[in-house]
Amino acid sequence: MVDQKQYRSLPSVSRLIESPELAAFPHADAVEAAREAIENARNAMGDGEPPAEEQILERAVAIATRLRTPGFNRAINCSGAILNTGLGRARLCREAVNAIQRVAESHSTLEVDLDTGTRGDRQRPLRRLLTRLTGAEDALVVNNNAAAVLLVVNTFALGKKALLSRGQSVEIGGSFRMPDVVRQAGATLVDVGCTNRTRVSDYDGAADDETALIIRCHPSNFALTGFVEEPSVTELAECASRLGAVLLDDVGSGCLVETGALGLPHEPTLQESLRGGAHIITASGDKLLGGPQAGIILGRRDLVRQVARNPMARALRIDKLTAAGLEATLRLYVEGREREIPTIRYLARSVEEVEHLALDLAARLKSAGVTAVTERSTAEPGGGALPGTTLPSARVGFPDKEPEALAQRLRLGEPPVIGYIQNDTLWLDMRTVDEEELDLLATAVSSARAIP
Image 1 (cartoon, helix red, strand yellow):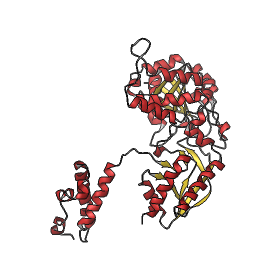
Image 2 (cartoon, one colour):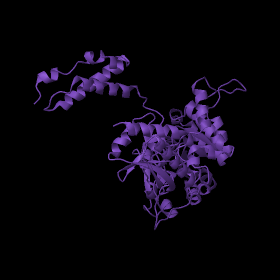
Image 3 (tube, helix red, strand yellow):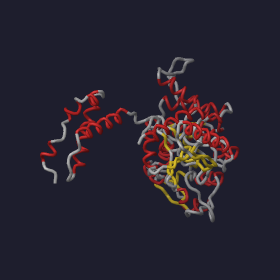
Image 4 (cartoon, helix red, strand yellow):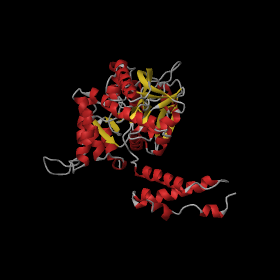
């Protein structure tokens, strides 16, 4: 058992922060780091001797360095998932980045009508682009798709009933479950049909005078196969109209292009849902659309305007940075330049192009004395989009006795590099790496391998 003399032998906070190593940091960071390092040493003593003061100081410096590192930093995504949720999903196009920078470093025309000099509407530029792209009568953008669903359900089904197929009662990650959102919005959820088969007659049978909403939720992160059946958007729209209810189609991934043209399985688009007769739809801005995080609401003008008048709409509205980034992204679609959007570009890449990047990286590493192997592999869209779909890819691997340690060193580097471990090898998938990042990536790997 450690006696009090050993505890008292630990250095004080004031002693540590007077050292030249910690004195180089801001005082508040130095104090916090010293306290944490001392506490770590105290907890680690157990029945043994206290760590040397040099070790505690070294730990304090490492903590202070970490405190100075931005929590939100750029990273190189080699995870094999194009829309990696942990890495912020969609990588923004250059036009969106420039637009965000313009409004961030200056005052902006967020809500000013330049023609009249009066108060304007931040939704107007987005409404114009979204209705033009999709054919919707009206549009509204909020801060994310969960907020969009919450807002629509609250607007039309507060104190009333909402019907949802059991096969679409989804959880999309982060404990976001559609039934919970419906209840939080103030509606009573009515489960309809079975997990694998739901028919229009099931909705008719479950409805009553309190039914105000039918929800159709695209299962964007899983796929039901085999003995399955579900009504089309058109069939549900007709059913909802017959019942005097509103049909909400949560399309989820926000796809605006025909994914078949990218060599991928079909993913429902916003345009298809509207043509099918959905009264109002919701979607994400930062998935297959490739923009910043946002919740897009489209549909009949009378319904969208009801949603916009809901007091919750102000609490959930987008800020100027999101508005600018989304506008720039949507404009690329309008101009037919969607392949300049990183998400679309990465999805459309040929395996030969990805393999060329892998071989190029391996050659750069070889010239730096780092041994690497390359091979064909598979990547995935990720981010709750195109479930079960894989894309042919290529990866660079590093046979190492301690792949976890190498992976950690790469994560802690500048910039962080995120790969994955498979069969005791750290792999870097190259589908989401741009050619201009190769030098940076090679340097990061070389530095990580050089650390003992």
